[in-house]
Image (cartoon, rainbow, N blue to C red; front, top):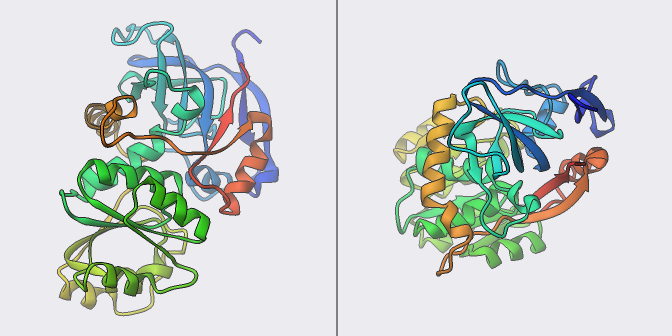
Amino acid sequence: MEGKMLAAYFDVPGGPENLFIKEVAKPNPKKGEVLVKVEASALNRADLLQRRGKYSPPPGASDILGLEAAGTVVGFGPDGCGRWNIGDRVMALLPGGGNAQYTAVSADHLMPIPLGMTATDAAAIPEAWLTAFQLLHFVGKVQKGEIVLIHAGASGVGTAAIQLCRLAGAIPIVTAGSKEKLEIAKHLGAAAGFNYKEEDFGAKCLEFTNNVGVDIILDCVGASHWEKNLNCLNMDGRWVVYGLMGSGGINGDLLSKLLWKRGSILGSLLRSRSSQYKADLVKAFSEQALPHFTAGGPIHLKPIVDSVYQLQKISDAHQRMEENKNTGKIVLQIPI
């Protein structure tokens, strides 16, 4: 298989059953890129959307699924990329191509795997944790003491956001769809948690904040939560939308209520951002958050891995995420 590798593919958009593994050419790293031998990758909602034909890769990106990976540096583009060395253990933020034995990635989008961490855990960091960090710091401009409502608090991004809120001195509260998921969120440091299926989380948030409201909302749900979100948003609050799991169509008087609260709706995606933006994000995260995965102290960051599947079982992994069964990240082990 010299010059070849195994990768996850689909020919026809649709369900998890359309996924298969096939042999393809190994990528050739370009100027400024590093070739990584992948040991583990992880699933994201974007992978499900791409598989359904609803989210195409950015121009020039690999059409192989996978937005994050962990492994070992095995090669470089023509300029050598002096920061990294052959054999370095790294984790990568990718626009695509992670669900394969090799991936080519910008040298500026790599981070060292924290000392003592497995590739399985490391693969659960790049996309989810950088997304959460971006939402809180680059977009939401979180401040110490602010209250942050995190929807899907037991998801990969949610479990990261809880911990990053605490690191920033903010107060995380969450929603989730089961008692078990709420317990996990509270164990990670959520100050409160509400089951959106059984109670009015907007009213509960107001109760928790003594009718002041929350300062930031991290929202991956969208339309189905909009009224309750707006009801519990503080004056001058920031409502950060980064997903539409509950659809995007809103029927109601959103704008006048938002205007009355002087609120802001901020949309944010990561995959489509520029290479320089991602490099700046990786740099900031590496300086402010990455040391806390290994250092002692009151705030120790930890990726939450829900389950691990072999690459050949990628259909089962997608099905688990489709059914919202996961708490934290679903990781794929890549055959070496």
